[in-house]
Amino acid sequence: MNWQEVCEHPSLQDLPFKIELDEKGQIVMNAVRVIHSLYQGEIEYRLRTLLKGGKTLPECAIKTSKGTKVADVAWATTNTVRKIKDEAECSIAPEICIEILSSSNTRDEMREKIGLYLEKGAHEVWICESGAMRFYNAGGELEHSILVSEFPKIIEIDA
Figure 1 (cartoon, rainbow, N blue to C red):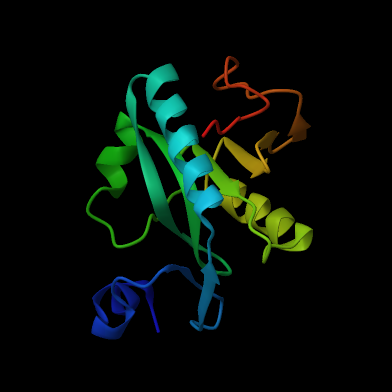
Figure 2: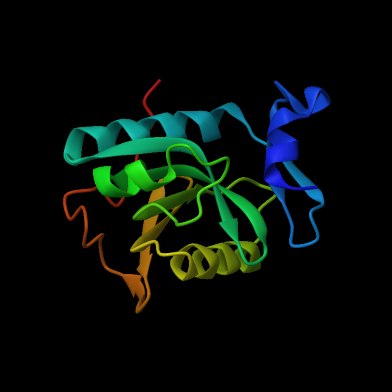
């Protein structure tokens, strides 16, 4: 199965799961909790507030060498948005790709996704684990984001 088929398949619409494809074209689904959505919304809001000249992309499908991976949040420059906006899945990664860890994610899976997003052209990959932010680029882990130096290291969800 390819990503276009996933997007068009009637039985795969409106599922409460995050869907990705592995390198064999098999569907991988992960259920997410409400807290995941809260972090996702807060990160997206902060990106829109702090960065100009681009767009945020929630649930951004990216074609990688290991199948279609879906970043929980991404940010792309206007130039990148022009290149990918009509694609079913991004042929190049947005400049920032962000994953929010769920209980079903493993550290190995996250390391692999960091590498895959960077391989597809991301400048930075961020990981949010229970609100704690970690930032990576091709050189490894960063003290803070280089692209958005004011982005907080901790995201707090007040309710």
